[in-house]
Amino acid sequence: MSNDAVKVIAITSGKGGVGKTNLAINLGVAFSEMNRRTVLLDANLGMANVTPFLGLDPLFTLKDVLSARRTVEQVMVEGPGGMKIVPAAMGLRDMANLSSIEHAGIIHAFNPLADQIDTLLIDTEAGVSNTSLNFLCAAQEVTIVMSDEPSSLVHTHALISLLSKTHNIPRFHIVVSNTHNIATAHTVFKRLNNACSRCLEASLHYIGAIPHDEQVTDSVQSNQPILMRSPESKPAAAIRSIAEKLDQLPAKYNPRGHLEFFFERLLSASGYR
Ligand SMILES: Nc1ncnc2c1ncn2[C@@H]1O[C@H](COP(=O)(O)OP(=O)(O)OP(=O)(O)O)[C@@H](O)[C@H]1O
Ligand SMILES: [Mg+2]
Image 1 (cartoon, rainbow, N blue to C red):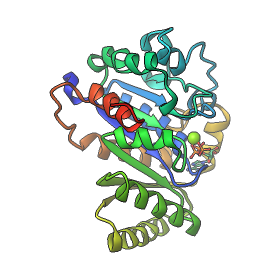
Image 2: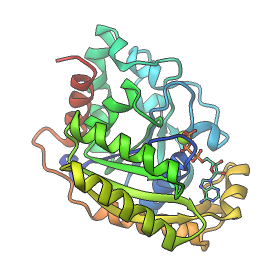
Image 3: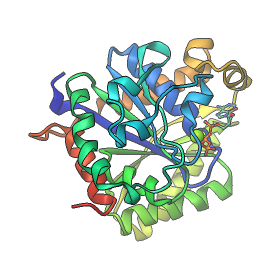
Image 4: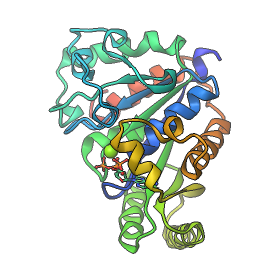
């Protein structure tokens, strides 16, 4: 693939603990299985999610990239299945607080990646922190993870309302995670879609449900993605199918390459012009 086809996919949720990091890591493995050169950026800036999930203890983080102490290549660590991980810049609560040196450096810091990757996945914090909003506004595709509980429907609807009305994000891919019943997951999506279609212009696309499975719990406890620990399991099959749907979405053409465009938009969303 050429560098203008880097696909940037953010993963978020209305409330925490629904399975975002589990999905993000396993999507990374699934994309790698499809021979997509994949980088997973941990945008949980309060508390790293991705590297602890995998039992990794990185020496450097995104913070070192932003402060120009390290290149992004020096910071990236090898993840399962061949993907690369950019560890979270912990303690960097708000992208709007980046110094001007960090600002100037971020686009150029990530530029070398444009030629090296096909897919950039971003695992974000739940809810509507400024940082998460910046990443979501800049990404090409926004995937929202929800559970099949009524409270998740309320939180997801609130998040989509905000992202659609205030930030003009036009479409969302919905994953129902950790569900005990696939039929219930469908029903929950229909309810969400009905509620959103009444008052919002955004389009919602159901891209799959991940069943609750003790094998996921085991995989989390052993710091291994379910796609590698139990590749034949139902959750693994569900995540592969979600990855295929996301992979089939067209990568928007941008003359400067989507990665550079992404970071420019990220900084613009953070208040820089
Ligand atoms: N399909 C599943 N089956 C069983 N357990 C699951 C499943 N999906 C997620 N879990 C459990 O839910 C927990 C939370 O998952 P995860 O850390 O991916 O959520 P999160 O949305 O990233 O949370 P946070 O908002 O705190 O970042 C995991 O420890 C995992 O054990
Ligand atoms: Mg998480």
